[in-house]
Image (tube, rainbow, N blue to C red; front, side):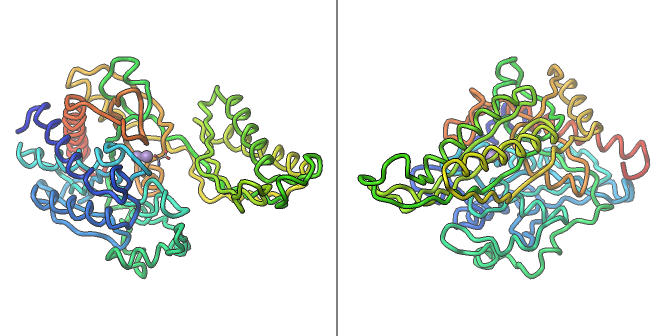
Length: 424
Ligand code: HGY
Ligand code: MN
Ligand code: MN
């Protein structure tokens, strides 16, 4: 049986080992189905084997470590799923996603070491496509597990024109049987995820962990503004159809609308922009930029999108440019199940930690898993609330406490399952 500090130290060591697998020299970038993802998946599978889990990999590349029920026959032979993702953004931190997979492996190991009997199976899942950075998709691997994958996502292309389907084959996946990755609804008890908060709340309140109430819904767009290339020296300002100047005005509108949605924790981000032809002395003819917009509820997010579309059309008309606004991802706000919140709150209380519930502004695989089963999340304090940044950091003590809280929450779910006599 490991102490909290030993659990935290083990987690830190595993995260450090995993962080070595990157597609970029000198920084951590691990994109879905890349060589770095392949190496990381192999290491995670080896860790799962070391702690006695039956290891497999599904058709979308999710590594799965399975532990049989030690009290079979109860809880309807269901399986408790614990997971997170091992893909990252560009120049990422080492905790976002990976901590949840490491926590699941350590919890499974401790449950066996302590002889804790479970009336349900335990599956630790390492998803590969939560960030959605390589392909214009996201949550593909957890969506396949949840049985809600959009098969056309297999035709999505990365910036080199490689389809997700071809990348999957090269990775060792098998795109022709994506449906085989799905669990049946009646074989799953719940889905739990441990994740860094990626925000400042827990640190500001001096709390090491918090229980998630909901995961913010989000919409992602690719916006193409087409104007007219021209000579930078000869076209008068009043006669220009400058795609970049028009896009800049649209971005200021995005910022203004999001600032106006403060009451709903609204945030909007233009994360990627491409200018063509991209010469110093040519008026930009075409700009393609992305929009990621989120809020704590669906209605304000959707009305903000409608307002932005109207403003973009007005700007385009005034500047004589054309506009195409394509949505490529949308996820509604996902609630975390009260019974799973209570399991985490009770576990934290057992460990002497004050109750703190909070919403997640970041998206998570729980958006997809909610299509299959109830979702519960535990947040871990992260320094300065920094994430999607190599400065991301969580302390050994907080990580150890999070793993122990996960173990105690699993014990509570086991007790519930036994006392209710059936599949809760
Ligand atoms: O974008 C997100 O919120 C998540 O980190 N993929
Ligand atoms: Mn994440
Ligand atoms: Mn992330």
